[in-house]
Each structure stands twice: as C-alpha cells, then as structure tokens.
Image (cartoon, rainbow, N blue to C red; front, top):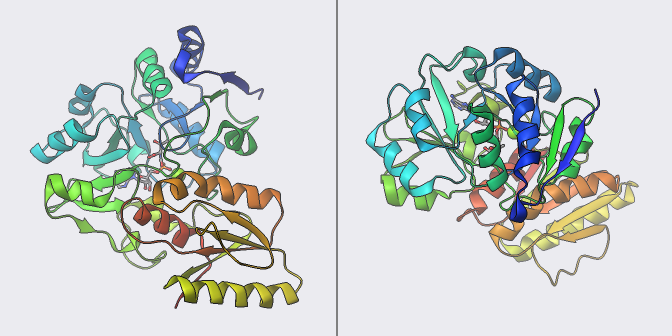
Length: 346
Ligand code: TXA
Ligand code: MG
C-alpha cells in the first residue's frame, strides 16, 4: 500500500487537508494523527472491518481493547449506557485532555473495540488536528497509539513512518506531541474508581475531584502474568526499544554509582551501552549518554523519542535512572518499568 503523508501546521490548520483524511476514515481507511499525548492510529469506530485492520497493521493482540476518541462531550451519552456523576465532573474538568474514562458500554460499541468487555474506554483529545479530524469524519474514532505493538509510542510522525509506512492509508504529520506519554486510563465502573494506567492527567489531580482512587497493582509493578487482567493491554511487554533496558531506582548517589558499575561490567563484555540520565551535570564516563530532562514533564516528553534514538544508534543495553513517582513521574516510571527486563532497587 502507498502511504500518503500529509503535513499540517496546527497553528494554521488547512481544513481541506483534514477533509482528505476524514474522507479516508469514512471509507474505512486507517489514518495516523497527532494527539496531545502520542500519535494515534485511527479508524471509524462504527466500522468493524476498518477496526480489524488496526489490529493487523499494528500486530496487536485482539484481546486488547481500543479507546474511542470523540470531539463532542455529548457523544459520551451515545457510547456509554450509564454516565455517573463522577464521570461528568471529570469530563467538565479534564476534557479535552489526556484522560480516558471507562464506562459501561452502549449497544453501538462493538465487541471488537472492547475485546468482549462490557465497558468502553472514551476520551476527547486536546489537539486541534485530532478534534477537527474527528468532527469532519462525523463518526467516533477508535485509536490505539500508532506504533507496532510492543514498541515505544510515537511522539513524532517520523516514528509512525518507521513503524507503519506501507501499512496504512494516511499519516498526518502535525509535529511533535506535547505530553509524550499516553492518557491516564481511569475505570469508573468500580467503586471507588480504579487507576488502570497513569498518564497525562496525574493522580493527585484526579484525587482532588474524586477523593478515593484505587490503584491497579500493575501500575506500579512490572507485568504480573497470573493475576486476572483488568486492562488487557497491561499484560504485554510494552514501550520497549530493541535494546534491553535496565532500570536503576533509589537514592541518586547510589543509583549513579550502580550505573557506573554496570556500565563498566557490560563494557568489558563488549556491549554498546546507553545511559538515560536526569542530571544535566552527570559524570558518567562511558557509553552513549543522553540527558532527558530534570522535571517530569520534560522527561515524559523525551522518553519514547530517546528510546527510538538509542535504537538508531544500535546500542545493546540501555541503563535508565529512576525518577520520583510524583505527578507525571508515575506515568514515566510505569513506562520505564514495563520496558525493562531488569529493575534494580538500591
Ligand atoms: O493517549 C492515549 O490514550 C493514546 C492516544 C492515541 O489517544 N492512545 C492509546 O491507546 O494509548 P492504546 O490502545 O495504546 O492504549 C489503550 C489502553 C490499553 O491499555 C487498553 O487495554 C486500555 O486502554 N483499555 C481500552 N479499553 C478498555 C476497557 N474497556 N477496559 C479496560 N481497559 C481498556
Ligand atoms: Mg499503545
């Protein structure tokens, strides 16, 4: 398939270009587009044949459900059969924005979207191109992140091209995404609500609106294979670059020394090592070293991009410093832990 790349400047949005992409979606085609979190791979949520093509293009297991993206808050009442008061509060406060809510699904939501679950994930992205595309297509749009399954999510069109060129109809290039990690996924079918995936809206802000929130065990830990999986996407190895990732968590001084020790050890074995640091004045002596930011929002923005840059440099091993679990840090640590094959806490 020939993939068309359409460059759109979000500041000077050309409606005619968006309309071409919307028309493709209406005809059952796949369009990758930017959101404020990461790039999504969109299909018409009311067209099961189109949705099946998403799973094929990404190599995504069919038991992993998709998020339905909308451009008008009222659409929630069509997609969900119950919209509790808490959901309305969250919608008013955080939409459009990086929060996905899980509600009991209505009949128009097909089983292929929800992987047979009785619930549906819904979000309204805060990105002009995404919102205009959804509006012009006149249907809700399902969109997982626009990467090959298991790879780091794309934060630039270039990443989508690397993974999906030749497999989908259109890639909209709308520049780098703002946040860099995916939306927060919150299940409102449980009481209290359950945080299934930390993301762009941090837990502290949600707690201010809702009070108590349960945290799903896998949010903080690594993959747990044997427990019942509530958010099926969580059970797969994820966000992973080609190189193996080792995460080192703990007090900075100790982390630093451990990383230096690991670097020396693997270098002796002839491995090409990369280090991801959050300290501008690092004093690591060997390896491909990248400073990915000091504050969590900057780290979040750079995380997936840096994984892909290391892959380009063909490193064998990436050693990452852990960050604090506060704010967006929880989302960053969740992605790092899921990408790692080894986590060292010292
Ligand atoms: O920021 C984002 O959310 C991006 C952009 C493109 O919007 N999308 C995204 O989609 O990250 P995806 O498919 O990569 O991740 C969706 C997550 C998965 O972990 C999936 O298992 C979970 O949401 N999910 C979807 N529907 C669900 C449901 N009914 N119940 C529980 N989890 C659900
Ligand atoms: Mg994804």
